[in-house]
Length: 160
Image (tube, rainbow, N blue to C red; front, side, top):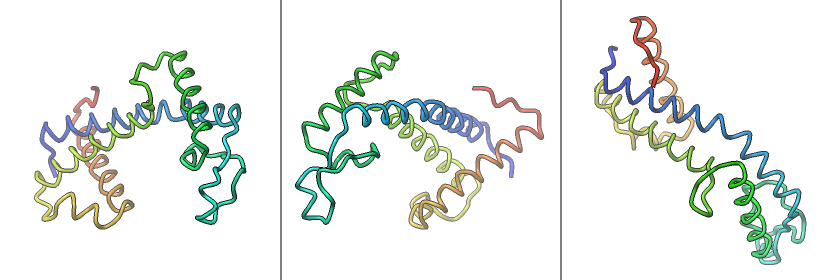
């Protein structure tokens, strides 16, 4: 399969967005851990009705929604302060990693839509998504591999 210039460009964009997310992920995860360690948010009483143990420390940033509101506010405030001190410039309340991952998903989606149309695969992006996240991600990786391989074999630069 010979990818078009447009698919190559979209693949390069997707690879760049993936690299950006991968590059900042360790730093943001370290900030999240630092904030949780300093604030020590606890699971709020309202989660008892769902069988959660209450007033225990939250150790995973993704579980912060279970915290008391005052703890959440402290966590978000401290995280924003650290992000600002490190030079991240986003609107208050926005996480650089979540934004980078969102941009990566959008770039992957654009690339996949182009590949599906270009290679006349006989299914849509929605069909792929319905098959599950693993199959969708597998499709993304295969398209990237095909395009990168084609470019290397034909001396086409992938620099953004």
